[in-house]
Image (tube, rainbow, N blue to C red; front, side, top):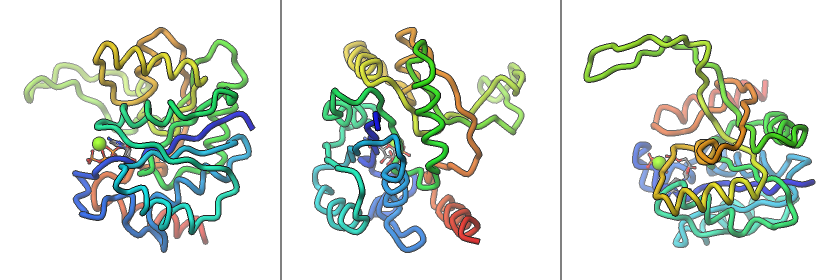
Length: 232
Ligand code: CTP
Ligand code: MG
C-alpha cells in the first residue's frame, strides 16, 4: 500500500442547512461520513487515513465515526481550515512522507466505491509523467456559456467532464501546488486545478454519476436510494 487517504469533513454544510452538519446526518443507519471513510479504508492501496474536521467536532468524529467503524488502517485527525483548500493543505501536512500518493476525498461523497478509488490510484501509479488522476463523469446536459442571461456559446459537450473525488496525486506534487496556491492567494474549486496551474499533468478516470456530493437536502434521498439499490 502506497497511498494516504485524506477525507475532508471540515465544512459547515451551509447549502444542506442541517444544524448537525451534513457529514453527520444519518444515511442508511450511519452518520453520512462513515460511508466515505469506510470505503477508503477498504481500499487495498490505502495504507492510512487522515480525517480533516473542525477542532470542535473532533470528539464527535472519534466517537460517532471512527469508533463505530473499527477501521483496518491507522487514522489521524487534522484540523480543518476556513476553506476546503485550507483543509486539504492541513491534511496534506500530516500525510506521511513515505507514502508516494495521496487520495483526497470529500466526506460528502458517501457513494464512492473501492474499485473507483483503486482505478484512480492505479492510473497515477502506472504513468510516471502523471501528477494525478481524478474521478470524473461525462457531462450529459448541453452546456451553455452565458453572460447575464444571454447565451454566448454552446460548447461541444463531448469535451466536458464533471470533476468528482477522489482526486489522487503524487504527494509531493500536490503539496507543492497547495503551497504555491497559498502563496499566490489562488483559490481553486478542486485540487486538480492547483496542480494543473503548476503545469502538472492530470488525467480523468471515468466515473458514474452515482458518486454524487451530498450538497442539498434532496441529495440525501438520492444517496439513500442508491445504497438500497446496491444491496439488492
Ligand atoms: N470541507 C472542508 N473544509 C472546509 C470546507 C469544506 O473540509 N472549510 C469539506 C466538506 O466537509 C465536504 C467537502 O469539503 O466534505 C466538499 O465541500 P462542500 O460540499 O462545499 O461542503 P460544505 O462546505 O460543508 O458545504 P457548503 O459549501 O454548502 O457550506
Ligand atoms: Mg463548501
